[in-house]
Image 1 (spheres, rainbow, N blue to C red):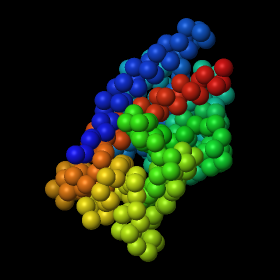
Image 2 (image 1 turned 90 degrees about the vertical axis):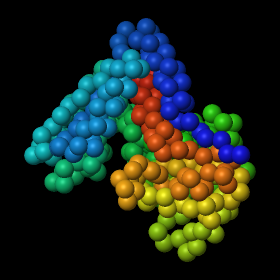
Image 3 (image 1 turned 90 degrees about the horizontal axis):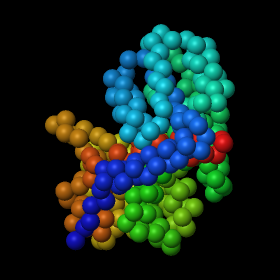
Length: 282
């Protein structure tokens, strides 16, 4: 019988802990933990994400500052704002909501965020520290997955973990976290010769490819832990994940649903990273 890992419930529990961290920081340092969020352009999905992040800040006692830039904002204007926030001692974390409008260079802009304020965990320095198992700010979604495993006392140590997807935001940092937790890790992608065979070897299978219901029951080993990072729409416009949940669930020991699985943990881990960044900055 499978067990669902409820990300929504865990996120609620963690947000209470984060609120306590933020309150303690305010009491000790005389100011609130501060997060600056930059949204450039008119992408409707990005606007929803930013709204949810600001709401999460309110819930956890973090001071949020949102900067809404027009679609035609110049690279120089964006960079000037980032540099100003980088120098602001009341700002502990800086987040640039992606994607940026096509005429802007995201890499150039993101490189201006100081490593210690990179609460998304995307900087080359933070990824490098993760790769060498040093203390760093970790990308929010994969870090949330590790918290979900921990909540169920699922240790990756000695287990075979397979990550399907190699994006810089999820797949690569996910693989590094599992490796740091002593799993034997395989990363699969579009050039993998026999994806099904690789997946069938997994004790822990993480799907992060953005293809609706791509992972089917015949790709999953009996008793595997299946983590679905996907957030997709099926042919009927219904929200679903990368895993064919209905057909896969009965083969699993644990599985995450979509919605209500990994999704709620991502913004929660952003709040967590912001509190960690604040405490490390002093």
